[in-house]
Amino acid sequence: MTSTQSEIEVAYDISNDFFKLWLDKNMHYTSAVYTRDDESLEEAQEAKARVLYDFAEVTPEKRVCDIGCGWGSMLEYVVRRGCKDATGISLSTEQTAWANDRGLPNARFIVQDYHTYKPEVPFDALVSVEMIDHLCSPAQAREGKAVEIYRQYFTALAGWVKPGACFGFQAILRNRVPRKRQDLLDLQFTADVIFPGGLNPRLEELIMAVNPCWEVETLHTRRTDYGRTTAEWLRRMRLHEDHIRKTWGNQVFDDYDRYLSTCVRGFASHYSSDVQMKLRRI
Image (cartoon, rainbow, N blue to C red; front, side):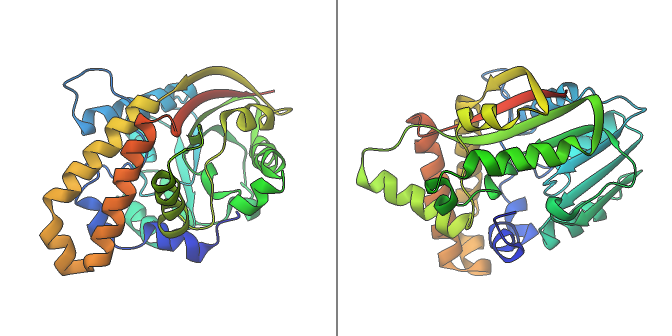
């Protein structure tokens, strides 16, 4: 991981109660998938989890790992729908504690860097939802190291499963470069203050990096879905402005208002996007 544990904790360990105010009830902090105009955030997050479960070809007989498991939201769906057992790994102590408190049967969540994790028995399926943005720093990308770093990730994970196993993968993408100074400043603020140490990959970098271990079988981009997701997060957070300012301070509210507003604008302007891929181990 390029992002250190302390940087991960800056991004995710403000307070579980803070995020609970504006995320969906299952605490998905990633793009939802909307299938209807009148769909709620909760329904759309369930749809996202369903897509990734199906991409990973999970069944009740399979062992599953979620890399960058957050609050355990994806694995909650996996366990509920059916798997043999589930393992979630994360560098966030707050998120891992929350996930373990869910009490999901046959599931465990551990604080672990994927670089140093070695499964005792191969997994049958993998999922990972918007974790890869923590692997490559802006400085490393400028040095031309992004594809190499992402390939190391995909190669390491290929060693966790048998040939033919599937991987339900989702990532935020950086797309067009803004031409307005304020947009550039706001995106830099998001990277430096909200998610220090990481960088969203470009789609072409991921396509190059999955080789030679994985085949891309299905690919969907979710730019408009993520724009709608972040707009709903922003709306919900603003409903609790007074409480957030009193409990966590003005800076937290102002920073997250700026961050979420930047996300909404970024997806609308094609600066950012999102991708879901079904990968199969070669």
